[in-house]
Length: 212
Image (tube, rainbow, N blue to C red; front, side, top):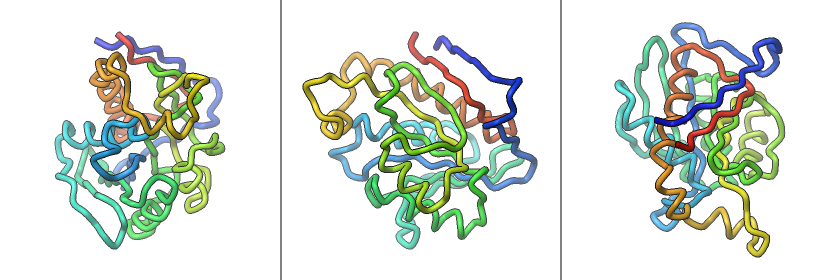
């Protein structure tokens, strides 16, 4: 069982939002399409959203939506309509697909959560927040350009990066064998976070750990 470290800042309402009944929510996994990128650190968002869609009752299989430039899964989960997307535009153009889906379904940024890798966070930790800068992440930068900053982030740590290797090369490498052994715990925790969001909890500023 994963060891969760939960540190909600309940005294400070900044960064929290509540989902009411009968909302349409948009869950976004960030990554690069193609088999050669499938197990890369940079595809942590795809990996975790795939797990959520597969294991969540009510979510349909992925279908390609060429007009939206993404793969889409949708379904009714609890009292919410959930749209899950994986852009097929490559990372730095992810905002095009997400904006197209958000506009079509009339989903406001506060009802959108993006799941993505974060080089500045150590592997083993997940940090949650609403809003803020891209922190150098090209996929988040593209989302901000198309949506503004006010969407949620599930930031999956993939660091630290060895000094001898560049950032781009590092994130485009597969997870190490030791890290791959922890991926089931990572996917379980991210699915739990997304379920809490969908069922009407909150996405706070919080850090969680999934290392057993």
